[in-house]
Amino acid sequence: MRIIAGTHRGRRIEAPEGLATRPMTDRVRENLFNILGPDALAGAVVLDLFCGSGALGLESLSRGADFALLADSGRDAIDTATANCRSLGLAARARLVRRDVLAPGPWILAPGGRPYSLVFVDPPYKMTADPGGRERLAAMADALLRLGCVAPGALAMIRAERSTAMDLPWAGFDLADVRSYGKTTLHLMSRAAT
Image 1 (cartoon, rainbow, N blue to C red):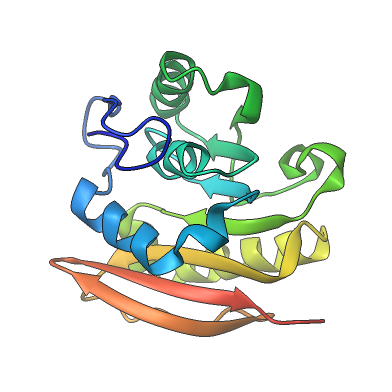
Image 2 (cartoon, one colour; image 1 turned 90 degrees about the vertical axis):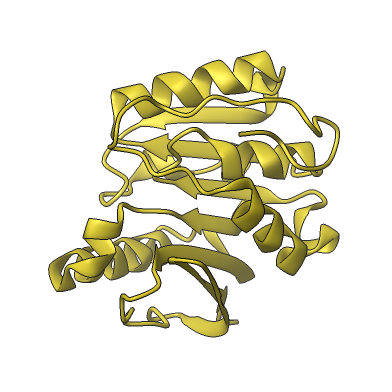
């Protein structure tokens, strides 16, 4: 895996070992960031949930985001994301947290209370395939809105297996785009203006 564009273009990043993490391929990540465009990244405050290797948050920082919070419940994932962040010299602009991302609380707030303008949600496919898992993800999104940490107009991406029928958009979001690449589908939503 590598950083695709920006100040760290071409730099390699590692993925956690084992089958617990399913990294997004460079091709899919490149397409996602092409859809978002540079304006969405300049000065962005990014939330990367189920971060795995940290590729989405670190790619965002490379492309001009101000800050990224990377969160995952897995020790191997957070250890790998932390190592990637340090090797790229991005530790001053990122915070890495090992928590249950389905239970957001004050730990998820960005410095200075700045709201997130980009939210990446990349859960295990088995979670999005399960109706109960999809309900938990929707409840997580609702908790983020109640915490006031997602800016009006913010973009949110959730990745699922192409064959999964997602229950979207989540309350408080509008469905903006759906793109499929091989077995992966990216669902893009925008935070409804309040």
